[in-house]
Image (cartoon, rainbow, N blue to C red):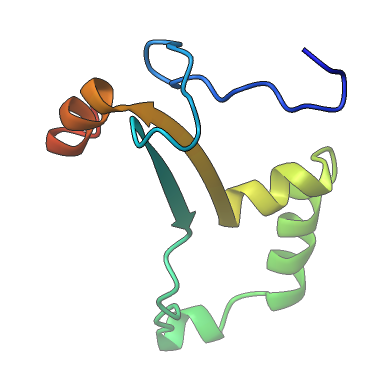
Length: 95
């Protein structure tokens, strides 16, 4: 295979080689994001040491990479599945 040509995709479940243009596989895009619901604050929450809370949150993130922090909030993933694996996966994506 020419070095400039892309490798054919493989099924992410069974590693079968997939051939673009033959209609024998599926492209699955998965998007996951943290709960977007704004937090609910009580009067007690408003009485807390906000600066102390912020310092604590910053300290919790200090040793984590930017990518790790982003991944905690949002991830997008694309997988390829052969026809057989797709039919199994679409019925029970957690299996």
